[in-house]
Image (cartoon, rainbow, N blue to C red):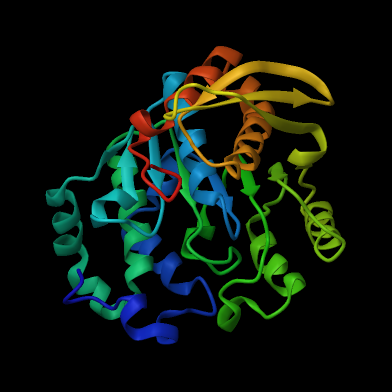
Length: 298
């Protein structure tokens, strides 16, 4: 893949597309595999990787077969495409490329566009129940934005990828709000005076119920004797919801990601039959269930 196919990191802005034409074309030649399983779509500047892994862990604990698509990878390309924490096998990567190589040459997709199509194809072949799909960049024009999820999540907004997404928070928020779909609920962690109206307007236009996670949920740290865990109290509406919750995700900033995931689960729990026990168990072993590695590790 690295040697033969276009790669965003190699050819820079030339790989960025101003529409979803390539994503739609790839979806067509692979048989629209994303329609064969449920999805949750996660965008944002920071935290979307953690939130995606937390949701995957909780859903796995609830007994679902869960696909997880994230980017970039740390050591191995296969980390981007996982089912119940196990990365896609090399033979599936090479097999997908060989099967569609000729058609790729006609479409001329980017490295990222091919990877997204590969993930959808693999998840369908693995018969996953649900897949957590992390946006690569922005949202509106991201290759992942052909899906129709059961829930959209936007973690936060800050200045990033200004050469593609815009130079102001309002412009960037508009791009990320592009994942909000008609009649599909959306969870947003936090907004400010510069972005709130953008999200509310988009949600209203799409008749999408909007949930502001930090308006309903909060988390505080408790002392912990175990350096492998942090312990939290989770509050809902100012009242204690979960006491002494242990999570293997370290770092104070993970509190924000955890309440995002808790709000997301609150929205979909009845549809997917997720209990408080699943939530507690999933949060306690995100790393072991999803093979999550990152900056928060010691």
